Image 1: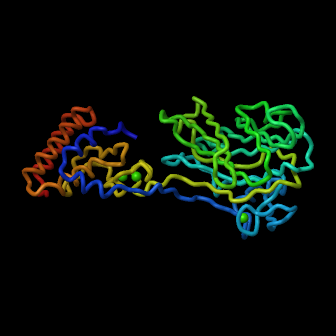
Image 2: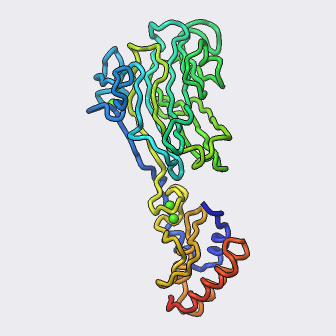
Image 3: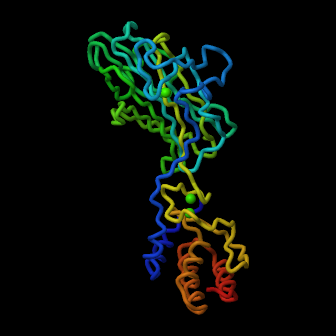
Length: 349
Ligand SMILES: [Ca+2]
Ligand SMILES: [Ca+2]
Ligand SMILES: [Ca+2]
């Protein structure tokens, strides 16, 4: 995306229509649910590798004494894998998240240091797996910390391969001593400098956050090495009989007007996104850029047209806007001249 136009906001402050503009603020924190399976009817999305060990099986609530997290069914499996409805070579504007509920039974008969790893991976721009982001869970019943007695210890890493005591020797381990459903969420986003960062969150069944880890690698540049979502799945499972999971989902930020600014950040959700600045049907040939609050140059010119009652005032408003844009290096002097000339010849407002 091109440099953000802080200048736009300065310009808005000089417009008398600021109150009217305010009415168009989007209050939606819209996200699009790209994928959901709670296993009420099928295992769609979790049967992408046609080998039983990598598939999920539906089980009714109460199976092995485990109530489903939601509805009447959940899933089990050995090392089940999902593609979250399809992997992608393209990182969505505003990022995405994946989430799954996993049942942790601290009264399991599994032995000390039984492990369970769940990864959600990022793909590269050729849609090939680039990196795993892994919740590493270990069940322990000994007194070697963190914690003691029957408990799960959870950490996060890029490692999918089981090593002894890996979970409890990992980064900032979380101790879970209560049986129940827990939500494991991966948030994939731009760190603000174009590099991928992944926030991994464990929440309890009420949605309260218990721990989070943020993993990032400076080589993971969005659009260069980093593409879109990879697959998700259990990469280690010492709980073959007891694995229970439910409510698998992938959500992306939506961008209703397609200007590259996600709805949650877009104060102008219905932007004029034509590639060039067009005034009253005449194409100036100047790039119609967008700022960080989702406002394009065409939007601004329309706002000026709507706020002025006569042509002279409109031309003056466009002159002020383009002077500001030029002053801030966002358009060239030639582009400024072109926009002003087309505005002058128009019959706006
Ligand atoms: Ca369910
Ligand atoms: Ca937008
Ligand atoms: Ca917009």
